[in-house]
Length: 339
Image (cartoon, rainbow, N blue to C red):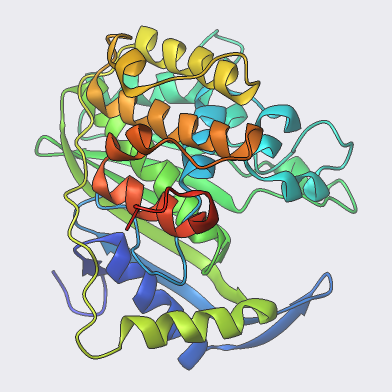
C-alpha cells in the first residue's frame, strides 16, 4: 500500500477512535464556530478498520450507549424517520427535529431502505448491481440530499454524504464519506451502524467481510467535550492499561423474516408490552447474534420502565463486551454482584 496515499489501517475501532481523538485535540487544523457551537477541527481525516466486526471501543470513561446503537440500526432497517422510536433511546434528539415529529437528516433509513419509483430501495439496487457486476464502481448509496440546504434553518442535515460498497476478490469493502463527524460522540454510532450494514450486505452477497474505511471532511470535537476527551486519552495511555478482550460476534445468515421478527420484538420491548428472559429469547428461534440484540433491548427496557436492578440472568447471558458497556453506562442499575 503506498505510504501516505491510503488511510491508516487499525485492527479495531477501539484503536481508531483513540487515534482520531488524539489527532483532533492535539493537532487540529483550527477552531471553528458554527451555529453557536465552538469546536476543534481537523480537516480531511480518513482511517480504515481491518475487522469491521470489532466495532466497540472500550474506555471506562466512555462506555457507549449500546441500546441506542442497536435501536438506531433497527430504526434504519425499518426505513423510519419518526421521533417516536428513536427518541426512546435518545430523548435529546428531539431538539434536532424541525416539526417535532420527524428527523430530516439523521434518518438514514429513508434513503437506504425506502423504495423508489421502481419499487426498489437504493440498498436493493446496489446489492443487485454487485451480484451481477462484482467489479462495479457504481455501488453507491447517496444519503445527503441537495434539498437539505434549501430549508433554512434546518436543524438536522445529514452528516453522511454517501456509502460505497466495493466487492473485490470475494470480499465486500465499505467506504463511507461524511461532510462532518463529531469525533467524540457521533462517530461511535456512525461506525457501529455502517459496519453492521456492511455485514448484512456481505452475507446477502455470499462474500467475505472486507475492511471498512471512514472518510470525513470536517472531523471535530465540540468544546464542551474537550475535558472528557482529555480524561479518556489519559485513561487509554495510563501505564499497564489494557482494554478487555472480547471477541466480536460474527453475524450469521440473516433472513428478512429474522429482521422483521427483531423489529416487532423491539417495538414490544420499547412500549413495555412484552418482556424477555434468556429462556424466552432462546425460544424465539432467532440466531444467537440477534438473541443478543434482544437481550440488550430487554436490559434497556428494565432501565427505562422499572426502578430496580437489571436482572442478573439477562446480564449473565450477554456477550461479555455488551455486558461490559451496560455495566459501566448504568452502574447504579446493575446488580451489586456485577463487576
